[in-house]
Length: 89
Image 1 (cartoon, rainbow, N blue to C red):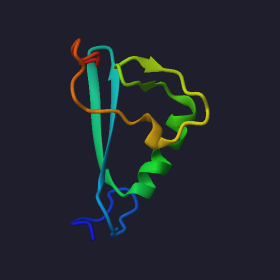
Image 2 (image 1 turned 90 degrees about the vertical axis):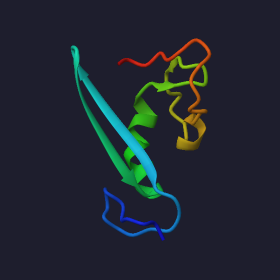
Image 3 (image 1 turned 60 degrees about the horizontal axis):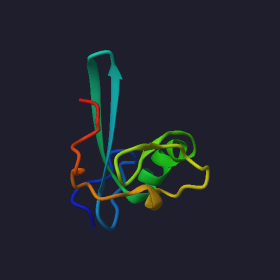
Image 4 (image 1 turned 180 degrees about the vertical axis):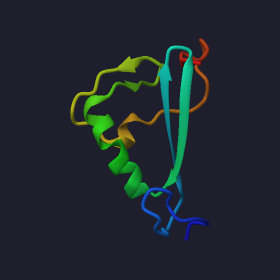
């Protein structure tokens, strides 16, 4: 059993918690959020993004969704890229 309930559905769950982050940029300002959630809520939360949003590929480039992505298929190593981070700071 996870140490804390899911922050999205408030239910206790078996297995490992997942971290989901959202950062919204407006000019030089940003708002950052974090959920510690169960696997089911992660899949529900990611569903629209998988269908419509760009996602980072293995080499740090933004890729257009094909429409049939699964959440597990868009994961890549969190190790920094050889050419440095391409994220917006």
